[in-house]
Structures are given as C-alpha cells and as structure tokens.
Image 1 (spheres, rainbow, N blue to C red):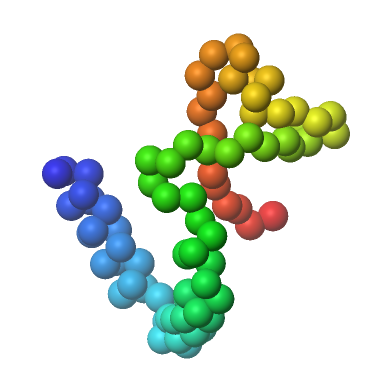
Image 2 (tube, one colour):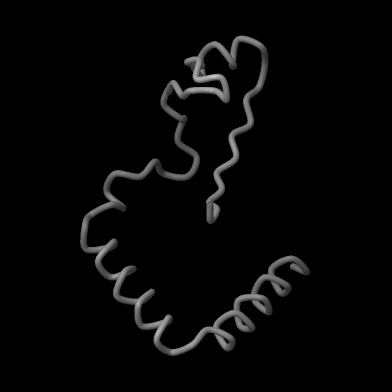
Length: 82
C-alpha cells in the first residue's frame, strides 16, 4: 500500500497547486468527454488487445501480430507535450 499512499499524496499536492481556472477547464473537458460516450468504446481491463498496425520511426508498417511472433509484447501508453 506504500505506492498507493504516495500516489494519493502526489494527487493532493497537484490538486492544491492547480489554479481554480485550470480546474474549471479540466472539469468541463472531462464532463464533455464522459458525455461523448467514449467509455462505451474503450477496451475493458483484462480484455484481449485487438490486433493493430502502426508506423515505426522509419515510416514502415509494423503489426502487433508480427511482434507477438517474437514473444511477449509490452505496450506502453504515454502522453507528452511536444
């Protein structure tokens, strides 16, 4: 449970440090997103991941099926500010 308490502390600190105007924008955006029905289209936790294809750094198509042919596949989702 140590990790959970650390995450809760970080969340509290972030909430305290976020200006009210930004919280308001976030809240409105989250409401719109939830009203869009997006949760009806997400993959449920524990469900198999569907096959997919993406471009690699050289703009070549790579499929999840071909990668799985080499062994287990780990997929990391992250977002960033570019």
